[in-house]
Image (cartoon, rainbow, N blue to C red; front, top):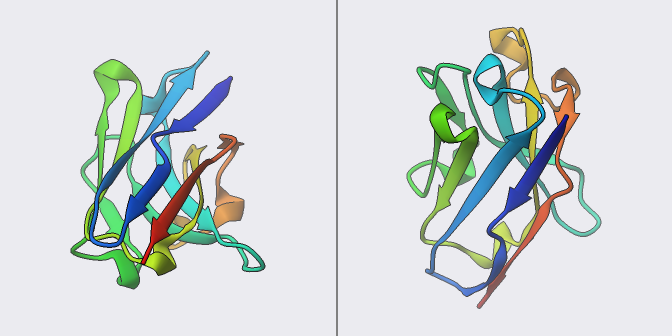
Length: 125
């Protein structure tokens, strides 16, 4: 069972990146997926989450209107489209999979069962 986050890189402020979270060894469509990020010397924070069916999504206030989470269960992949990036979005981004997460816990890291290794996003000013 493995999750792999990819798609990070260096981009100028105002630019875009699309992160991918791919599962291997298990089917992602049984799991809610969360995207989290951790900047240097800061705690890990939730960015967005999506239910296993894709019918429910949620975003941290600072990324609403700029980031979009989606999933393609046929490709066993969840995406995070990030537009209008800001320097404060710079962080290592992680995806995580969780099963049977109650609604109130969807943005809580400890509710998730499996984590990928993360991909670095750097936004220059």
